[in-house]
Image (tube, rainbow, N blue to C red; front, side):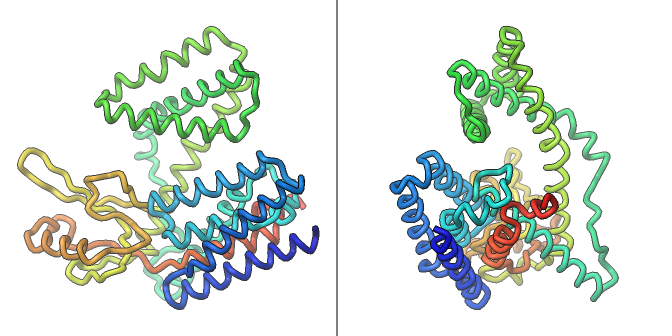
Amino acid sequence: MIYYNIFMTVLAVFFCSWATYTDMRHGKIRNICSIGLIYAGLIRLLILFFIGDSSLRTVLSTFILGGLISFGAYWIGILAAGDAKLYCGVTLMLPSSVWGRNQSAIPYPALIILINMFFAYFIYSLIYTLVRHLRSRKVSIMPNFWRVKGFIEGIPRNMLLFLRFMSVLLWVQYLANILNIQLGFYQLLLSLALYYAMEYALRRLNISRYTSHFIYYVPSIIILTLNPAILQVYWKMFLLWAVVYQIVLPIVVSYGLKMDGSYLSNSVQIQDLKRGMIPGERIIKIQTGDEIEYIKEPAVSSKLYDKDALVSPDPAGLSEEQIQELKSLSELGYFEKVDNSLMVQHPMHFALTILSGILITIACGGPFYMLIYR
């Protein structure tokens, strides 16, 4: 079994390295790399299940979580289709002897590789920024991303949105207690799916946000009143997600936006845009009565569900139709307030980041921070 695990690991690294080469050389990832890894990974999981070396729950969690993350990253515009398929393939291929050697607290290869990928991306961005700083003293090494005033002003609204999600998390916890089952990580997945389904339904029904607060909070108050013992489990989860949602996410998102806008993107005149350029910001159409206005806002991913977004960051880049539409609107004077320009990202070969995430996983036996505990 040891030689089999080594063979699977070498195979995953080889195909990911090949994909990295073709991505950096030709700007595309061949299907033989990405689809081949997915097929081989599925066969590996099935073999392990039928010989009794892996449970059905492990097989399903590996496949479902890897698929959800890869599809979600593609759907919101973080990864291109080829990158998403490659990431899904390597999560299915790597054996547990690679990503679980250090008894990581995260027993899911898809999450471990994702954490290591973004750690690699963070290091690459810092190196790139340092190189730019050494070449030109006009930029600082670290972007000034923390705005205390804006953070304080956003606390009430963010807290209300956070409490809505925590209410859904409480419902799922209450249901798990009634059924006497341990959902574990699946509680988070189920809560997220239910939360976004409810948000979508409330928008479609045109229910105001103030009214929808009662839909979330009243059942939660009833549950806590009738079952005070549930607080013993709930308060720890509440504190954890409060720190993540209120502190960690704002810092990470702000840093990403500032890093992207300051160092990883350049301003290009709309008339000079070319096919394949990846926008580094979003252009939103705002219509009030008969007047139409276009504004720009920073963004690190594409909002495919936002029908008012004229362009958004998209790994596929701008199409000829989008460029012609932008140029036509620019000639009509709609973009004068935004300097007739668009922030364009530097080409990012994400296959290299995926390969780096795999190598970090192999070296650390789990998330990158596991080296600290050795």
